[in-house]
Length: 239
Image 1: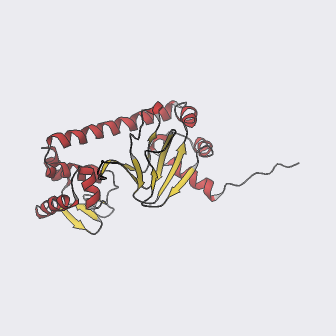
Image 2: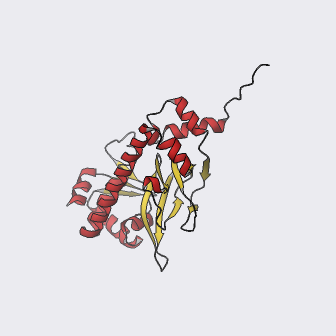
Image 3: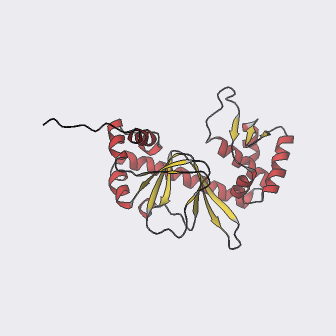
């Protein structure tokens, strides 16, 4: 009897494409990506969805392929404080063996997102069992730790204007350069989102951004901030 071969569905091909662009899998061959994709459930999340809360039980590792996710906490009076913005191609979640914890945090999709979900057993066998992936995970978590330490240092020692300048540069460097004007960078965050990242109010952020605009360092557009002089902003933020 002739064996039948099941053709890859559009969903299977999409999942493989999603995983192949994730940083921790960049050393894997296409066949390895395909095998991994068969074990990793994929979930699409509309923008503005809170898909993880402190009430969640159990461990889960999220692999973000498409979109942008905000991790935040709520104060006793209900004020949100953003602890991190997670970009496509990286990992986050509640996974003790990776030293990852949500720490009473919420996860909200800022844009439409595509996520792969992994259990503790999946992480042990599929990720940590491959030294290439394990190394990339170590590099990713190390960069995140350095970024968190830098933000804490900024909170402790810098005034808001310099803190916001440094934040704009950090966020802009995550974005791909503009095609026709590669010397300029953009930040696609609202004033409220920047306030939550900087630990201040939207009105205060607007005031500081206007000062940076008047100084010729940025240009304010609808839904985005164009950095006209990245190096000058960097120098101001590092003072």
